Length: 108
Image 1 (cartoon, rainbow, N blue to C red):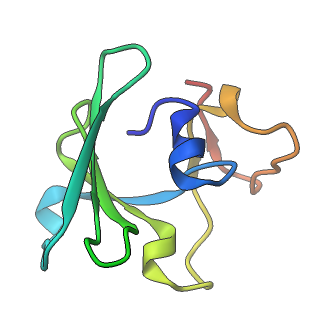
Image 2 (cartoon, rainbow, N blue to C red; image 1 turned 45 degrees about the horizontal axis):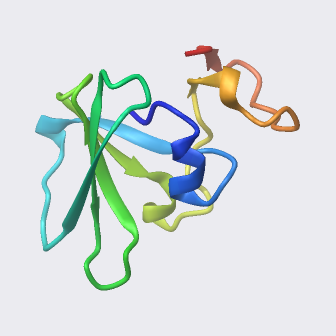
């Protein structure tokens, strides 16, 4: 859903990590503010919803996969959260980043 190096700038990290859920499995409760941005290739739109109190991103959606809701893994505040199973946009990853064995890989 997040399609460029802007993910790194947005998160302040070397990557963005999220858990994706089908929208019919998600119930959005409470207030949020939003920010919409267009991908670098001008083909996709992503809407980020964040807490109006602390500014943390709590979920986001993308026009390329409107049936999915992505929740940043940090929003779960659980250090035992399972490791990722899919890696995307690997052509933009930092070269020192090592990924778990058995993960599904996608360059872009």
